[in-house]
Image (cartoon, rainbow, N blue to C red; front, side, top):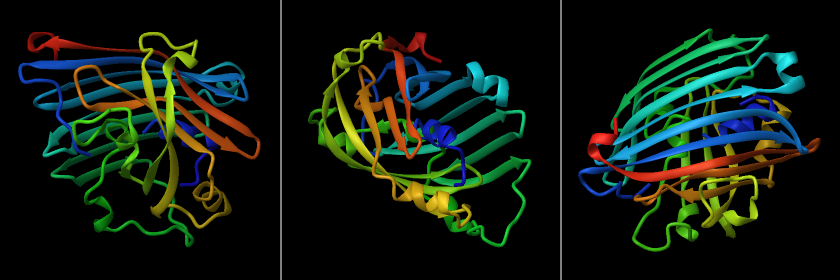
Length: 275
């Protein structure tokens, strides 16, 4: 996954549970700011709906300021799927990214945890040092947006250590990689004065990146897999046992990228109010 640190940080923003009670659904509206060493680089928005039939999510992101003048970067993504016996099972994913250097469209369709149809245009050119993707890399995986929807097993504290007991097997059409979570500590959203809508407890997880296939055998990939300074703060969607990121911190040799929620508001709605 030879990507820029910014794209890596965004994708980090990127499974046993029960959704909201039958006949009801929960909706989350969130907005995020992306900064590097305190300088704002971009912003994003996300809407997630969860009910007894499954989930849907849609988001957009755009770089800002000087970086926008250089790259002109922006993108959108959407996903939907089911939660069956505590598993996230994606049904469809679509993503579009655009910059001055490259634009790309990705569409994935699957069932029962297997991605069956893949459309990526344009594809990256083949190289001799790229680890080949195989059919097995499409099985028991989630797309980058569905990966952000994280149910918590059991009936204990939803922001306790169990929130971080997971490995996210992600396939985005070009890369197959794992994000391995481990519990670091608890925190409070009150520490983040810039965030509105949620002020409760948070689970802080350390994240390890493990490349599986699709990536090139380059130094940047090895450095990313050895990075011990990647953390995610998780908060619950009201009415569910599902947590989602409110903050991602991605340390690097040149500084720290941070994706921080500035607005994180969830509520339970009756069936008629959910799509």
